[in-house]
Structures are given as C-alpha cells and as structure tokens.
Image 1 (cartoon, rainbow, N blue to C red):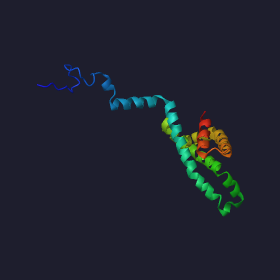
Image 2: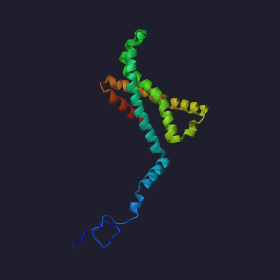
Image 3: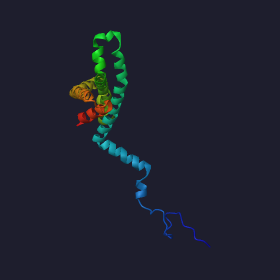
Image 4: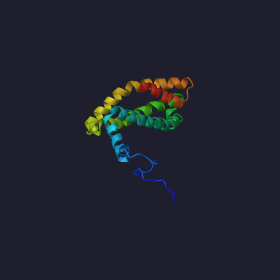
Length: 172
C-alpha cells in the first residue's frame, strides 16, 4: 500500500500541509481587500488629491499635445499674417498656456469629484465661485510655468522634459 500526500490543509495527520489554517487567509479575501482600500481612500484626502493631480496632469499633457498642431496650423493662415511669426516661434509655449487654461477646468472638476465632493459644485453659483477661485489660485503658476517652460525650450530641453520638469517644479 502506498501513502499519498494529503492535499487537505486541515489534515494534521500529514506533515506536508500546504498552508496552516489561520485567520490571515480570511483577511486576504477580495471583498476585505477592496473594503480596506476603500476605507484608506476615503480617510486620506492627500491620496485622493495626489490621484486627482496625477490624472489632471496626464490630461494636461494630452491637451498640450493636441493643441500644438492646431496652433502651428493657425500660424500659417492668412488671417494671422502679422502674428504668424510670433505664433510659429512660440507655438510650444502657446500650446502649453492654452492647455493649462483648459486644464484648470478639468482639474477643478477632478478635485470636486475625487477630493472635496461633488456637493461643493452642486449649484451653478457654487461651481462658478469655486472655479473663479481655482483660476485665481492657478494664475501665478500658469504664468510662471509658461515662462519656465519657454525658457527650458530655448535652452534646448526636449518638449516632454520641459513639460514634466515644469510640472514637477510647479508642484513643489
């Protein structure tokens, strides 16, 4: 007669147990893990704010990429003859500035959705008031970041590095 190893983790008659029966196995279930992550998310506004910023910056980068060909195309149109040289020379910085202006609206919504609660923008008056506050708060970094990004580009820094470097410095 041959002895077969037991695969029952509760069978203590065999020394080849696969795993000891513990309460740890109960705490590692998917519903408990999801519940723990949800609690951590709800209790930590800094984590929600960081997630909101990360998503907003990724959208900002996408907007910047999308606006650049539009701005370069505008510099070649007849209606912009006087401004075309300036637009063409500074297209990357103009794209950055316009993308930043648009992204303030996006970031404002993401902050309400993920950090502060949609009830903070529940009415038109609340939305416009907090959006005005957001534009007021971001105005300095909008101007400073655009100047810094333009400066980095003039130094020969690649567009992507200039973008993310400016974002990193503006976040500190």
